[in-house]
Length: 220
Length: 94
Image 1: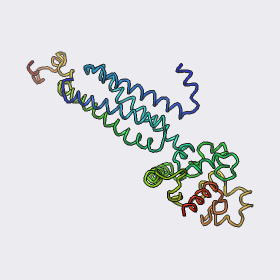
Image 2 (image 1 turned 135 degrees about the vertical axis):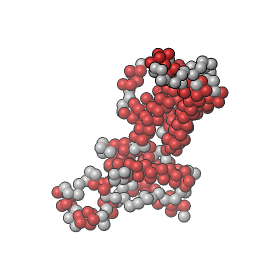
Image 3 (image 1 turned 30 degrees about the vertical axis):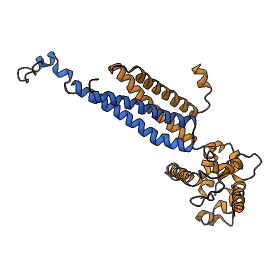
Image 4 (image 1 turned 45 degrees about the vertical axis):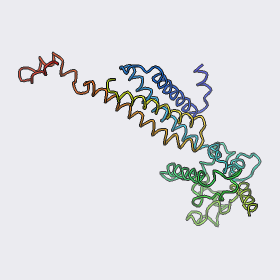
């Protein structure tokens, strides 16, 4: 039965989650056994408690953290805050022609399309991105938690800093022949950072942005 | 376990670990942002505190039973005989 269950795990993240949950269950079982039986603390009891209070929780912590960090990269996680509803629906809409939707349909982005474009790409990019995530959560709890569907009534959503072209350049080379032909006038400005990709290719989240604008107009 | 306080510490440690496991398991089953942050901060904090409490309880227990201060090798008769006449006299048996 266990083997069958393991075969149904489709990713490393699911395997880690399964290990974490199994270790948590073992830890709780040992704790419950101690609370119910209240055995004398002999060597065997201490060893069992060391497993239940030390080893298993440590495994839960390690595997759980890795699995959770992996999950925080996915689109369903980003969309789990209700203010992200329009962005999520647009990105998952197979008929949408927005950049977000087209990139989400690309199998190289897949479920991680939000993170792939919005993550920082410096040496400590993952850490700064997660720190920004904590800021998102703080803002969500303090400013958007009691807003209406899709965040209606809350302040408009905006990026903390201008979107950098480095994110686009992870895939779209600025030295490719086709790119140079199409962007002959802007190449120098692009390379110096004076012009960003989304200055011209600005249909990133149009549906979401138009909905927010409509909502703001209705509020006025 | 002879130290009375040590028993209570183990009890608190077990309860704390169960609470921490509840936090962590719920964040894995329902991976919502707030729950994840709570599990990774409060949950893990409680788990670390509970483990420290358990280890302290074991140390207190060893101290109260005297095991931590009398290494078995030094009190063994063979070890005393091998030490020779310069060796300090063995402590009187109580």
